[in-house]
Length: 331
Picture 1 (cartoon, rainbow, N blue to C red):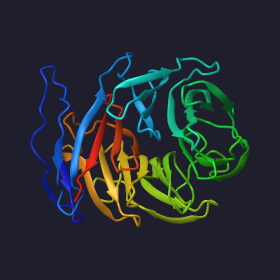
Picture 2 (spheres, helix red, strand yellow):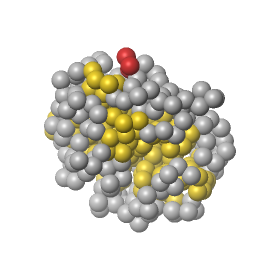
Picture 3 (tube, rainbow, N blue to C red):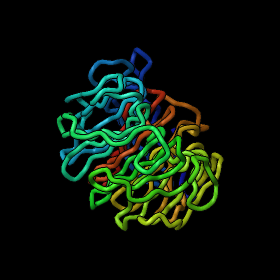
Picture 4 (tube, rainbow, N blue to C red):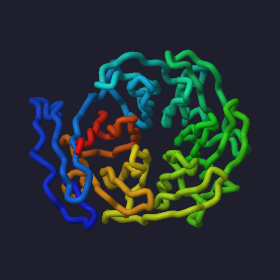
């Protein structure tokens, strides 16, 4: 595992991970101290491929509940799982299908202030809303390009007023919906085509909402991060395709920590990168050479990312079918 500081200097991030007899990383924390970076430790808290509770098949979006539990949308198992803060399975709901409470490749997931769970049902081109225990409350949308319709919805976030923001892979836009699902506004493409200009998107697959109400968006196909205001006005953008610090290889998930730093998962670069609120690279975590890795603190196609109030960072890995947690050092 390699961490990079502000100047991109490679340093050792700790000992090689302990490997079990099966060849999978053991649940062992690895201390990470990238120069001028973010000290802390990574550990695997849940994983294994399969349909059993606590196993995964393509874990994508994740969110952290007020009680510290972890909610995961599983693309391949067509379900939602709730895990404890330590990774133990608590509950699950859903199966493959198009009926109420069923999913086809669920992707994004978010939790409202009231505990309701919002799921981007990508393959069914809709959003589904559940109680904290998995009871279906509502379904919004259908396939289309009109307001309130969706094509492959992926990114999800809620603001403090309960408005819901949806990033659409198929329509290359971000929609803002009211708390009851009524469409309020949309930004990006007007004809479904992607664009590279300010405020345009080429597969907006992940975003987070800052305390100011602005959105920070992972613009996958443009290999950049964009910030837009809560009213949709372009504010800033940074990044380009590449492997250097501040460059991206298909940015996917985004989360903001209590210090305002922006954490980004990069699907193609198999790394997690940390940026200042202004987009300055601060640290990155990956296997040596940014190749797919199975060690602790290494990644194979990371997707979702979420941060709890204490600053612990959780990452899902599409390729390794597991969740890793980064716990910052208390300094």
